[in-house]
Length: 524
Image (cartoon, rainbow, N blue to C red; front, top):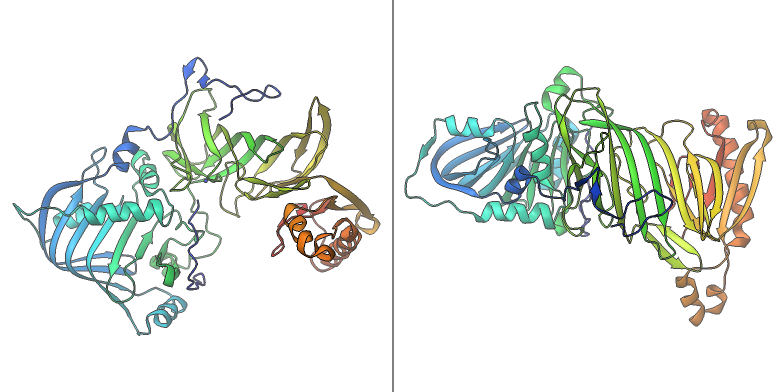
């Protein structure tokens, strides 16, 4: 089945993402690693060339050329076509101006029905006067060899559509398409990426048809094909589905493992200051799912800026991380291609504000719930976690996993946590807590904890100025209720679904008042 989609007027950023001192011997202040200068970000020659992509300047006349990509067909009736300058001998883009149309016939009824609801027509048929294409598949060779393509001497190439597509990826959908293209260029496997930026005349002028064998981004993986818009008035996914031939072969499922790699182990050292500033060092072990993998994407909060990346032999590695307000995803360039099944450990040093917000009164809000460390953005990716936290003395921290130790070192409290089994995500909550706890004897003394902050956040203090009865409230009095409800829930769900794999559950207060969230062994 395809994923549901909703039109909304709210534009949601498509987010896929310096230490100046030493603490506890974990971090080095210098940017020198193993005696050699650290590699700066965004400097790989092929990536720089992709980032600055321009058209070749040689135009071609087009007459009735059809380009079929899975369930979508682009028919270029008449006009001119120009290709992007090659990188490493491979052409990765093209621009067409003229008369054309784009038809889409998804392989499953639910997605065909979705399109008919959105277009109010039985079949999807969009008309356009220009499109920009980016690809690593055989699009270039197909177009160059098409019977309806011929050289057009003296005809200029329009750079606008290509420039517009770059603006879209960097400033509107916030996805580093050049880094994804680089992944295929440096890999040894044939690339299958195809992205069409369609300026439609009927349905939307801000439409993208996206095909990626490793799963469409925007949280749509593992589906490989998607049509979506970035128009604020019609924002959303119009159709999302697997490859058509996968449905025909009965292979299209929601648990496909089509990512290029999986994370299997994380060793994280994290320091959080009173202001909420976070400094981290992560040793991330991944296993490749494909042969020849050279470029990997790790999910990291945009304002956490990477300083250095090193390989498992201690050598400095190239990495990509653009401005935090643009297509800021964190990508690492490996020294050589990995074979399928081969493991490799990447060590990243990063730092920044905004991932954890100081809400006042000893209340903290972990904004980057699943991206405060570089890891996988797929929820079916399970890893082992070893976590060390350093926080100001006098504050409390609770994390996923089993607590192995907690000691005071000068003005810091250092705690060590370890997952008892593989899990998709690790998290924490910190503050100045009052803690209550109980055990459930019939579940082998399963431990339940409730933690509430002793003081209210600044927003509540502000309310107190105009409404003392409301603003003067405290949450510690509700801790007993939260503890009792959690205890009942653990027993009830254990009766229905069997015992939990964990031995404890911590229910923690948060300043967000409009939602809750559950991580392994911890509820926000």
